[in-house]
Image (cartoon, rainbow, N blue to C red; front, side, top):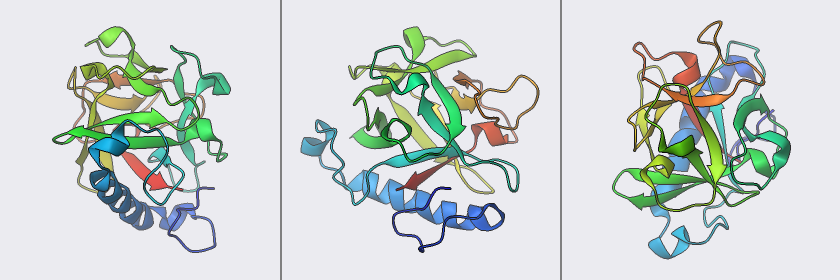
Length: 197
């Protein structure tokens, strides 16, 4: 279970998770905006948390799924998948402002950036980690959506981060994370929350 850094001592419980996650998201984006340009080059957190767990909305009493680097590797090209939250550093990320409303999403374990493979504009292009290089395929913006959470949109393609599940729009453990055309109404697998831990 994910316990936000500024939350109570008890873990989040799924039935009441949405209002609290919305507050955590606001906290994380405020902290994001407070990062200085000098800090942007430093992978060490400057905000008062180890990192951000980036979590899709799941059904009531569903598992706490988060973005996870497959195999916990530091290698370029490692796929991003949804896995149960364990608190490991490869499941934590830093949102580093790069100008305007854009930010990089850097992995705490590898210091690599969340990246759209091959700078693709295609639906279902995989998200991977790759050494940060300031390309548009490593830049993101978060757009608040009605009902809580955020779309996370790739600056290069304009497509949405998606916890891809061919059977439904519900995130499932082990699902690969891709970019797809932003859907309306916003499905749960395109609705994300930033939880500082």
